[in-house]
Amino acid sequence: MLNDSENGQPTKNNVSSGPEVNNLGSVNEIKLAEIEVNPFQPRTDFDLQALTELADSIKLQGLIQPITVRRLNAHSYQLISGERRFRASKLAGLTQIPAYVRTANDQQMLEMALIENIQRENLNAIEVALSFQRMIEECSLKQEELGERVSKNRSTVTNYLRLLRLPPAIQASIRDGQITMGHAKALVTIDDSTQQIYLHQHIIKQGLSVRKAEELARDMQRAPQKKEGKQPEPVSFQIQKIQDDLASKFSSRVKLKIGGQGKGTIEIPFLSESDLTRILEIMDW
Image 1: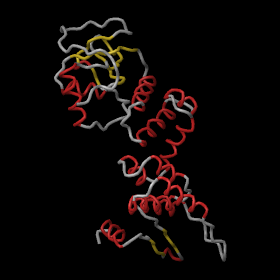
Image 2 (image 1 turned 30 degrees about the vertical axis):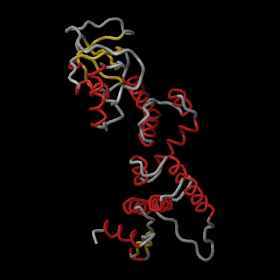
Image 3 (image 1 turned 90 degrees about the vertical axis):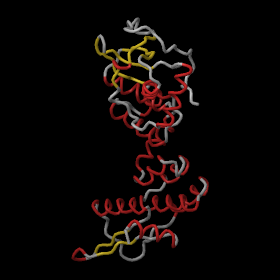
Image 4 (image 1 turned 135 degrees about the vertical axis):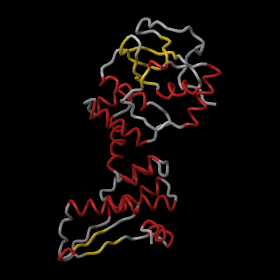
């Protein structure tokens, strides 16, 4: 059974109707029907089982940690933080909920919601990175300022933000727990996106450790570039984008060779017979 994450005293569920809001710094009992969700909430995925378990805990012990809202008018509030607790309280059948009432403009609401979201222990690295990016872009923060807000040093913030430069297929693997943050940091050190995807697939197929992934990433970066003969023409942005999109689709390195009159070839290497079968299934062969 899950309990709410922070310490405090249990709050009784049976309270008188028509609560009157007291001092803005105090805890108030507010009707759930009068609270609207925060439109700036960065998290949209709430695990139903976890919510149900928290709802069961609330039925037995009450809601331990109040939510935070801002007052819109006499009988209307907007959620700043605590949407998980808010949803679980509804599931538990509560009609009122303990809440801190704060005054906040839209940017302050976004910042507070993002900070609370980042501080949750069950966030994956991509969710953290996206929250960092939103704080920088939408709250006009520098990385040093962001680090101060979330109690992390600048290098940690930078490492998370670099994950968003990885191809979509790799970001999805981080989000889904197929590879760890350590694997992702090794992949980020590789400049070529097709090589990133190639190593990413190798990590998953072979179950490579972070240390082995780091070794292979270093080997890829040290590999000498071919300089003999005529140098190939620079790849255009359009062709590079097609290569990256195909590489993400097939989770493998993809190379386009285009000659005269628009003719050319597409090369998709594979690691094994089973890897070939996987690629052919994607092609609906």
